[in-house]
Image (tube, rainbow over all chains, first blue to last red; front, side, top):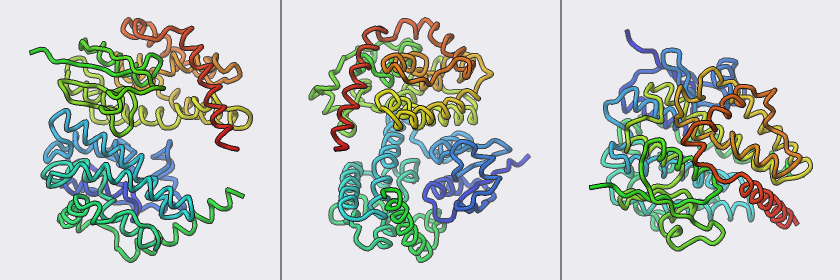
Length: 226
Length: 226
């Protein structure tokens, strides 16, 4: 019996694409269900009772949430073309850097996009310091190994969303290819991979979306400060 | 050749005990190196270049940091008596709830200990709401299965440190055994397990330590607000 896989997602969400890429790399067929994250469906709220966020993977009725937990689930459920390295130490490193990029870089880079003044400068500085650590991982074809793996998918947003956020904001400067040649080289390779290239949100629409989001988040932030 | 395992830790740290318990459950011999986290050694700073925190596991010269990444490393390196469930979906659930308890419960419970006034009430409310979700996991002997596993080790601090934090503070009330009977039953069983029972910090010393820490963190917080 063929298994049934559904993915509840959102068209411009980096964590959702992380899962889309993993499923496509493994050749797993799935039904893509677009959610409106600003007007969440009963389906999403019922399936993800805890965080109420996309992505949500539904596999033969089993519900898995959190993009990193989903990646691990996919890798052990469809074991061909493994995403995580087989060596225990290499696995640990992939998990560590994925978590680092999520906890340290993503948050500060996103804040650098929507904030202003001193706050923006501070967030940009933190993001650049985190990128410096990731730059030091250079030396392999793809950061996680010679083919696209768990770590590449985890930090894949750096190659596409980060330049979009810089452009959406206008004054945010984080990704300097002179300063981060290894990341620049990895980004180019990553975006050329057929599975990645064919599964990205349209650039213009993404740019317009984050330009608007940055203004909305900043307005909310100012309102909450008063 | 026997492998060489060292653990850089700190006597009252829940994430360090998570790793100690895992190594002891697996029967892995290791050298315990006590660090002074208020006056970090060159050794710690050089080994954990990124976060500069304990625990740090050194296995045959390989350095692994972050207690959850270390647990996964231990489980795949010494495969007998597995910590993570074998079923992919159960594995995903163990990882999800471990992350949830770390991101949602630990932070609010710790803040409830050192904060005061409205901030304390808010942190207590958040911690209680997170515990309610964990309470719903009841139904198994140990939360992660019938023997101590990954999830039990991840949330083990609830059984020992959380009551200590409540006592250290005096007015913090989170763990109500009437309201959380499954967690209370699990805590009792968890603390009776020989490996756990024999590997806990002395209660009086831990109580005094966190009483002092709560005051110090609150003083720092007030200073940073002015």
